[in-house]
Image (cartoon, rainbow, N blue to C red; front, side, top):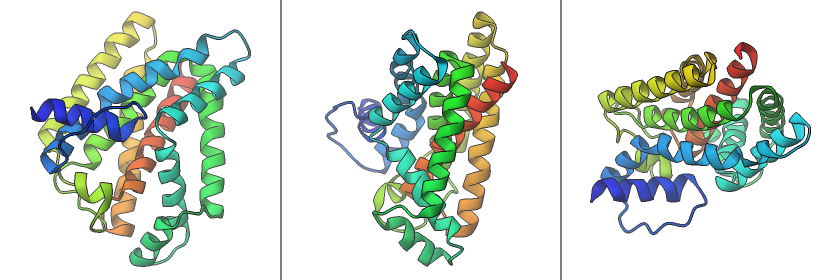
Length: 244
């Protein structure tokens, strides 16, 4: 079944959870990117566990974000740092892509990582568990849109080339409506009106970065996808912290 193969591919690619992936092709990759928000939901729920510990808000938030990084192998943070180095270099697309492929992290990447994690930690300490779950789901929803048809790969090979253009825009829209609807219901139940607003804001921030990356690099790469996840995650946490 393509659906089950897609879920396994999504879990295996987007998390540290051990799964057996028997089939890897563009059809399966497309299903995986559609199901990415489901993986985000699981990651968010598990990552909330440290928030239940007695202690200061900042300590709990830092532990939760650390657990999330472990559960994702730090891949999205690595992608954010690599994209920051590539775009920050000001080089033409080909050279920027070469910079992003290097294993080391440059000054732009370090600054971006530090600032992003500081903002996430401060916002999460104020926003709470529901915001973290919403942020994790929205971050993976950004992947669904980044892999929509019409979005090209920046270079051959790699994860970006495998998943680029594999999701129909109509499907991405339906998934988005479902996520916003669930966030709206959760917002009513938990008296957190910011949740559906945060989903839209987080996705908007990620799409703005996607537009810039496409203009500068010509398309998406695995690093771009990781950066989109972290951008959406950060935006959701900030909106939830500000609006409540």
